[in-house]
Amino acid sequence: MRRQRSQPADHGRASRETILDGAFQAFTKGGYRDTAVDDIAAAAEISKGGIYFHFPTKEAIFRELMRTTADKLVGKVESTVAAESDPIARAEVAIRTVLEVFAGHRTMARLFFEAGAGGRGFQAETNVLHDRFANLIQSYLDDAVAQGTIPAIDTRITSVVWFGALDEVVARWLLADRPGRLEDAYPTLRALLLRSVGVTEARIAEVPAPTFPAAFPEQHR
Image (cartoon, rainbow, N blue to C red; front, top):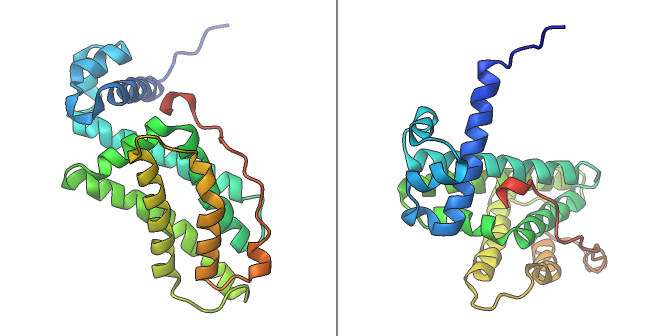
């Protein structure tokens, strides 16, 4: 029986993944500014010409790395909340899952925040990521309002505030000289956020058990 040849598109995707894996290693070792395309080529074990065949610039590689990692993180959140029917429980699980992933993958979290502190282009990419998570949270809050679980509120503004609080907690953890356990922030953060939308104290007292750290794709740790 003749062996089926691999399709060019499949080979191209595999090459891009190899480059992104190498880029992640290089960026986490040297940071974005001090990492050259030569460093990425060496880490990916691919020629410099092969890099430029798929990506025109180092910035393009970093942007793609941000997008693919964000896709994996969003996918992780969505698969985790799928088991929950209650919208407030979904919002809780979404917040907890983001903390879980960052707690277990500090290097990945640092890359995201380094991008946000970069130039205008990276800030725009970071804003897209923030919007994706804010939109997820908003959808859960919209459902909670529709079901009468919480009073009518401006769910758009609230979702931005929720993600902003989460973002600040992670940022301070990354900047700390002696960071504690990120997961320890969850009970307090959860209580503050739930109170902000009118969840009852009885419900807030039911703190779900954390499951840190969460699994995440090996190549983007």
